[in-house]
Amino acid sequence: MSSPDPLDPSSGSGPIGSDPDAGSRGIVRDGLAVGLATGAYGVSFGAVGVASGLSELQTCALSLLMFTGASQFALVGVVAAGGSPVSGAMTALLLGTRNTLYGLRLAPLLDWRGWRRVAAAHLVIDESTAMSVSRDSRAAARLGFLSTGLAVFVLWNAATLAGALAGRALGDPRTYGLDAAVGAAFLALLWPRLRDHRNRAIGLVAATVALVLVPATPAGVPVLAAGGVALLGGLLSRSPDPTEVPGPDDVAGGHP
Amino acid sequence: MWTAVLLACVGCYLLKLAGMSVPARVLDHPLVERVADLIPVALLAALVAVQVFAAGPGLTVDARAAGLAFAFVALLLRAPFLVVVIGAAAVAAGLRLL
Image (tube, rainbow over all chains, first blue to last red; front, top):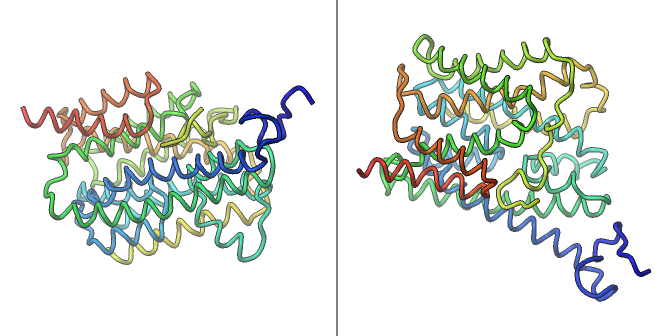
C-alpha cells in the first residue's frame, strides 16, 4: 500500500485515502477549464459569423445545432469570402467527418445505448474526445466526456450569442484582427496532427493546391478541392495516422 | 442561407451519431481509414492558407500573415491555444493601427 495505485483516481492528490472524490473533481475541473477557454474564442465565432453576412439567429443556430467549431468557422469563412452557402455547407460536412472517427473510438469506451447515445452524439467534438479517450476507466471517460462536452456546449453558445450581439456594435472585425484569429485557430487545430511527417506533406500540398485555385475558381471551391489531396494521399500511402485523435494537451484549456 | 445552414447542421449531427452507432468494422477498410484521417489535415491546411492569403479572387500578404507567423512561433513554443489565437489577432490589429 505504500506505492500509489495508478488505477485509483485519488492517488497522488493529497494524503492517501483522504478524499476518494478528488479524482472526479479534477476531471470536472479540467472539463470546465476547457469549456472556459473554448468559450473565450466562441466570442470571435459570434462576431465573425455576423460579419460574414449571417444573421444573429443563423450564427447562434450554428453553435446550437452544428456544434463543431472548425466546421462552423469553415462555413462562415467560405460565405465571407463570397462562396456559395452550399460550398460552405459542403466544407463544414467534410470537416465534420472527423467527428465520425471520434465517435467510433468513443462508442466502446463510453458504452451508452438508446437515448443516451443519441444525446451524447451531439457532444462529440475535438475537446470532449480529447478529455475522455485519455482516461483509464469507463466512469472517468464518461465523466470527462460529459463535463467537457456540457461545459463547452453551454459556454460556446453563450459566447456565440455575446459575440454575435457585440459584433454588430463593434463594426468591422478586421479592426480587432479577428480575421487573423480565425487563421490562427485553424492552424492551432491542425498543429497536433503535424507531428506526423506524412501529414506535414499532405498539409503543404493541400494549402498549395488551395492557393493556386483561389484566382481560378469561385470562393469555397479551393478548400473543397484540397480535400481531394486527402484522397490522393490515402491512395499513395500505407501507414495509419498516429495523431488522428486529439489528446488533452491538443485542445484549448487542456494540459499535458 | 437558412437551407444550407440547417442541412449542414443536420448532416454534422448525423456524422457524429454514425460514429457512435455503427460497428467499428464498417470503416475498417484501410484506405477508407487513411483518407478519413487525412481529410481534416488537408482541409484545415487549406483553410489556413485561404483564410490568411486570399483577398477576393486574388492572393495577398497583409497583417493576417503577420498574425499567422505569430501563431506559428507561439505553437512552436507550446503556447496555450488562447495565447495563439488572441496573440495572432492582437498582432494583426496592431499592424493595421500603424
